[in-house]
Image (cartoon, rainbow, N blue to C red; front, side, top):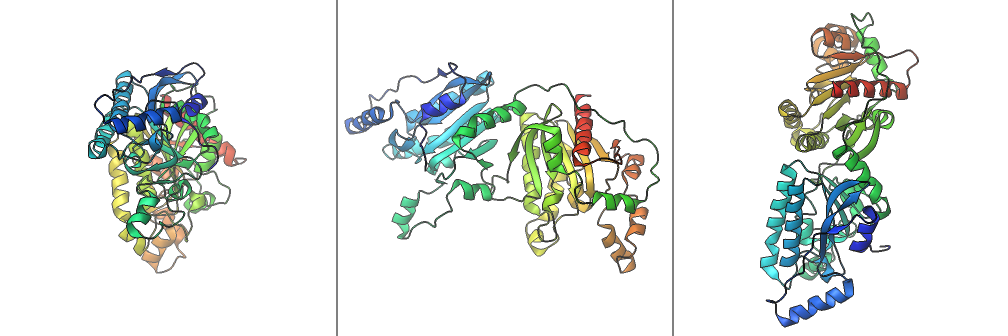
Length: 472
């Protein structure tokens, strides 16, 4: 590890100068054994703080926030009853004052000098945090080296957005305890920030120096009001489409066509990616992000066609990631924008055992019960149940050459004719074109595609259309 940041250094780094207001009150240690009090006095001298956590409020680029910061130099950042009470009081005050909460951990877990009475306070901390989240307030966490035990198993794992320090040891069981109990070392590389990010347990690995920018970007979507749309929207396509269905399908499959990455790059600002399910799964076929599309704060959940192939299809974990984004939008009261662009969900024994059909059903069910504004973009290929999983929004926008079908036209041809040679004919019969979908009332607006469009210009036009609908 490089420089180990202290609690006060991190507060100075993230908060606006002069904005810190402490919420901490003196700790009463009168009822503790003298030997333990001596340990606490030594910890105060070593760390320069009176407990293992500091709490309060401040400003981040002018926005009021509450904070809870672990100080590892105070008895390894361990959480005793006084520290737990300080955390609970801060979370409840943040909830009462309607403040986003920023927390950063660096702890060995429960303080062994206090045992079970301290250990069970993790339940009270978790209850307070869930009340904060239930109030629709953001909770962001930065996991530092090391974060283990009850801290990681409670307030370290309950955030909307969780990022970690490079190289940090993060895990439920401390490796020294594991080796002492089992007589063999814990495997290298498992309890690292980078490995947890690869498994979708944390959203990103971020050096402390980059933390102010990340917090600023997240709060720009989670807290700041919408801005005025600035991109030029195109007049929607009207009337019938005389192009063949197969022509549209071919265009949607062309290399270099705009996808979700281009939509975020050219139409979005302040984007913060949420990677994985936070439950040990990650599938790059779906992107979940906080962003502002042409000034409008939203959660984007989209299929990334560039990451889907026969070798890496969109599996059940991708749809579980999508549902994380849907739940995120509902909890924080943000509009949900879904992007449909897939050659189809994974068809394999692994997908069947991973509940691919159930995940499609749960995505559809979740979207149909959301109370926040919802908008789906049929951006390119819309194939099968995997496409339908992100489709049931109140408003559906399609690009001119996008399409939707129950399965690939080649597959339909195989079922009906025993070969793939009738794919174009099947596509025409199935009425897959955006214009067909509009005529059937499935699509509400078609964004025209121009002869000289590139990925950037089409993505910009789509973002402008989204903003127009979100502000109407």
